[in-house]
Image (cartoon, rainbow, N blue to C red):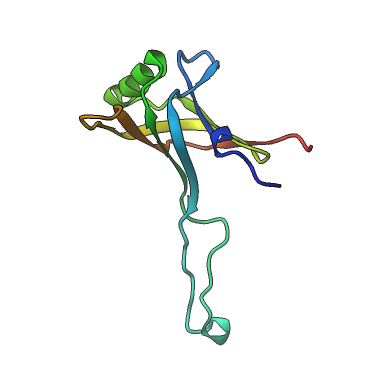
Length: 140
């Protein structure tokens, strides 16, 4: 995989629950991280004193964050409503030349900021709320 444009890493939200995803407008920076908890099963008999981990155990999670400026009332309102209603709708994360991650996420924080002589900005954070599906990008 060669170098990619950062603007091609997209966060999309299902606006109405009908499976039609729309890009969250105004994002300038986006980040996605995947995590897996370790389950340490090391004992006194572990070979050479090396740590041993239990394969397939532990909780898996994904976190998404983004920041940007207000551009689109529809996606801004949807993110705000998801937060206040405590919903966990479907989101898609498009990772260029890698694939698409899709699943339920909860909006865990929304921050708004602005300065006297600048634009109003926002930051949003999401946490996975169930199993995620990965669809690989087609080979080039």
